[in-house]
Length: 325
Image (tube, rainbow, N blue to C red; front, side):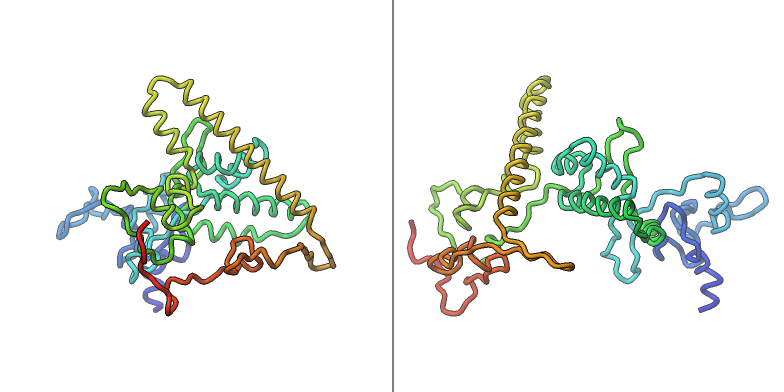
């Protein structure tokens, strides 16, 4: 063990600044693979005039870092923290500068969560989480509470990061896919739906087959406006005025939806009876037994938020259609 710690394992004693430090990034001799000069199998490593190997060892790498030379960017093989699990890749996290940018766009410039998500290519749930956590962080700083900043910096330093754009004119780096279709609970059950051969069965038909109130896939993606703008841009090339007008319309529609949700939330908050003690805040709302519906499975019924088990795999249930409409 000590032979490895004093040999190849010495590279892991001090993590590389601005880079991950996983096992797969190093060879058995403890050299950073991506920083070495590429050689073919069986070929002797390149040497200088004095016969010394010019491939970078740890000492040479540290000298290059001290002199300001950049470290080569990690490859996919460098982002495997577990050598025995080659299918897992460490995913990048938001850098501290990018999180500050997200918080600034929402709190100071008045951007919506949807707009920030589309601009920085970050999921809306992650944008909302960043805003809430940064708000709590600023609140704790004003209250004089101690933050675990050294621990957070140490963890962030060991993970791949998505940096913030260096300038205002620079396009953000793609962080993650933001338009993946979420799995709706109505689509997780088994379904036998007979369709006539002459019928054009599309996504809208599939949505109605699962549930009467289920929207088609094109409308359930997180950013349907991006698809609409892309189609409009393709159809109206050279007409930037049309694109700009549609963007403004979408922003106004989103602002109206946000305002409506705030009013509904405020009305719900005002209607609830509250009982507060030093540790907890209890909210009581009036409910009706009839809200569960005739079959007891209505969406607005009491307990619906905790989930209702589907009947598709229950014994005795008829799972095939008995008639064709």
